[in-house]
Length: 141
Image (cartoon, rainbow, N blue to C red):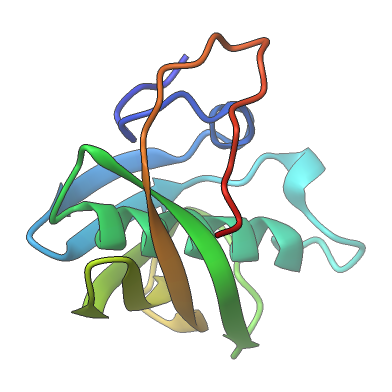
C-alpha cells in the first residue's frame, strides 16, 4: 500500500507508480510498465500513460499545499512516440488560484525522449479521512 502520494490510491498502487519528487510546484514520478500494461503494439497503453500524467499533474498541483486534494477537471494529452521501458513523468504547477490549479507534464523514456505531454486543470478539495472500503463525498460545487 503506497502512501507517498498523501493518500492511498488503489489504481496507482496497482500500476506501481513511484514518487520521486513532490515539492514547490513540481513533481516527478517513475513507472515501469508490466506486460499487462502494454497494448497490441507491445508498448505502454495510452490509458496507463494518461493515468501517469494525471497523477503527476495532480501531485504538482498539491505540492504547494499537501493537505489539500486535487480532482481533475480537464486534461488534454498529446502522444509523440511509443513509450517503452521505464518512464519518468515530470509535472509542474503553472498557475493557481484559491480553488483551481493549472498544470503541465511530460513523460520521458529511459533515453530522455519525449513520449507524451499533457496540460490539466484541477480543483482543490479538502481531504477527508475515509476508510478504504467507503466512498468519500465529492462536491461538484
